Amino acid sequence: MSLDLSPPRVSLRFAQVWRRNLLVWRKLMLPSVLGNLADPTLYMLGLGFGIGALMPSVDGVSYITFLAAGTVCYTTMNSATFEALYSAFSRMQVQRTWDAIMNAPIGLDDIVFAEMCWAAAKSMLSGMAILLLIWLLGLSHSPLTLWLIPLTLLVGLAFAAMALVITALAPNYDFFMYYFSLLVTPMVLLSGVFYPASTLPQLLQQIGGGLPLHHAISLARPLVYGRVPDGILLHAGVLACYALVGFYLAVVLVRRRLLK
Amino acid sequence: MLSLRAVRKAYGGSQAVAGIDLELRNGECFGLLGPNGAGKTTTLRLALGLVVPDSGEIRVLEEPVPERAIEARRRVGVVPQTDCLDPDFTVAENLLVYGRYFGLTDRAIRARIPELLEFAGLDSRGASRIASLSGGMKRRLSLARALINDPDLLFLDEPTTGLDPQARHLIWDRLKRLVARGKTILLTTHFMDEAERLCDRLAIMDHGRIIAQGTPAQLVVGHIEPHVLELHGEGVSRWIAAHADSVCRRWETVGETTFCYLHDPQPALAALQDVRISHEPGSVQDGGVLRYLHRPANLEDVFLKLTGHDLRD
Image 1: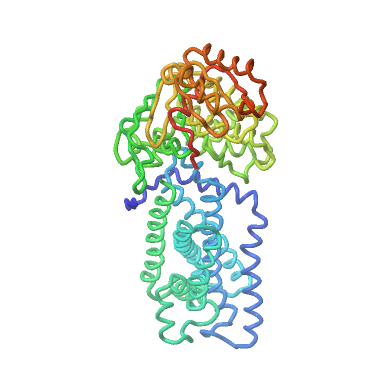
Image 2: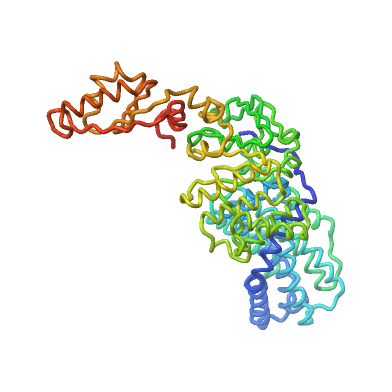
């Protein structure tokens, strides 16, 4: 079967699909917000104060500050990933929402783009909640933390795009466990969310260096510490590549799946 | 309205659509009939631009498809085989959100919703959740949703499959009203009564080809003898052996029933009468019970003649 490899055709029509997801979210907001925000907040506070009490400082800051910078990215990643896997799969495969939309004058590429933007927007909100916590707890007073806002958008887009590739390939929900076990969990452990990646063996550090979460944290952590990150272009560029390549692959694979 | 010329689409080695020509006239209801897997749904998806043909030419409302499928779909309404309604929304929200996909303003859609709900017989159901609707209501909501953009052309993929008789009649009534308002309809079905009742013209598809086309009456007259005798019971085989060659033009046995197709039913009916008089039906000696039904030929006979009696799964 031949693949349609042509570049994605995206138009402003995507906005109506994005709005559809927003309307559903507004109806189911309370449990969704609770799940997206309460969990990472509790983890961050529990680990931050609990483990933080056992060690005086990491990178010259309190452990909870160290952890908070990682949690911003980690939470954003998780939120985008879950939305673009489970929720998008429901809409594509179970509810056939995408099929209904395609009968209207909206193309499939627009739908995939809307899903990516929606998952990114939702995950941005999760990252933003952690940022709010950072401010409220006084973990950082630097105005540089405002740069975390566009950063979470970029992180959200990258992980949403990657997850949509998996969604496009998934025969069922169970398939997503491969993605978590083989990619997401190792990435979290290699990217320095809970401890500095520099404590890992050289080889593992090198592997981690290619992963998007590593690049996200490489930008977020200095910002929380009030410093301008090194290699901004490289880190942001890698994240953008994951977003763009992921989106392109997702579009090609979803076309193969649905336009036949 | 809609035209397909020499359209082909193959998957792997098998031809889902093997070169079909179709031309829909303004304001008619056109039925696409065929057994499962005949290529009906693929034909609809080709016309919507959701499948790219291997060859051939498709025009929908003057737009070339798939090149300008999105523009064509602005003026098309679709009732898909599975309703795919949004379970998270109420009935009215389903219409609102769907209208937005056509670029309509919320105000324009909200102004249209009461009329659509009334048409669909869902007047008091605007605030209902989808899960609380019956199968027939969901189908009617699908139809209302397909009308949100006031389309010129409607595609319906098996609109009454899975519905009870009351619900089917209600859908039929609404479709007739739409045709009366000047809409053009293309529907797929495998119910012959539905096709006979609704469609001005029909095409019978099998194995990706259109094997017959015309009005329901033309198809019956052109493809089949006007009278049918359905014979069943243990005595059938003996009666067939004795009489069929002389009184039936053509016969066919499917399971327990033999269908005899006739131009003049009198000789066959007389032969059946003789059996009844000379033997007491039901006795073992005469080979068993013989029952029969004499009826005019219908579209189903045409369909079965053209597509065969084998099961299609």
